[in-house]
Image (cartoon, rainbow, N blue to C red; front, side, top):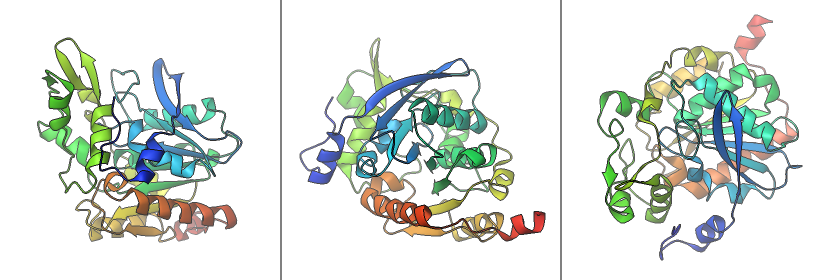
Length: 304
């Protein structure tokens, strides 16, 4: 299956040519597929995709980080090449992320990076498993209202009844981002579209389970206000989800003790439209975290 077009830049072609190791771990009765790059003795870094996405949303980003980190990227249950469950919850997905990190042989507490719905999973993990984490980076995940994929899945039609297409190229042509945004890197979009599909009787259809959007999301606010590891918030400059009021609310929940970083020229789907800027921001925050002590939030000081 092609993974880059003729217009793809050299950095992208080189990155996707770096083949990860495919692995599977069983978590609570469900097979969870994940990708692994780098040396297991390096610090751990787990990359968590958004709703209706999959691990290959990170396959052109992970190799840029694998020289310094042992990188894993899971397909959350109901996504990609992982199994399906009767019901889904951020807490279960958080357990899956922690299980993939452990199965990969990561040494020491890892850092989680989650985009959109994956950011909600990162927040849940930072609360439930924070003592086992070195930190979490939440990428354009709006705490206060549903993540955009779930909002569309519950109220719209885009994800509700996945269609079957006669051939792969027709299916790729029907791939759309939610929420919609300009396509600045068509070669990236082509890669994630092709990796989003599977062959079935009669043609090609999407890998995700439509039921992943039928889930209980209450309590993310409480999780964010009581995270047990350091957190950074990244947002796209043009995101219409992490708006100034949402950013202010998240900053308040975090006790105004966590960095909030704006990725220039990015919309909601930061890993797709500004991958190099995201990589640079991640490198900067991770390098800082290697040499600094977490700041105690005002909320935590009041509770002690």
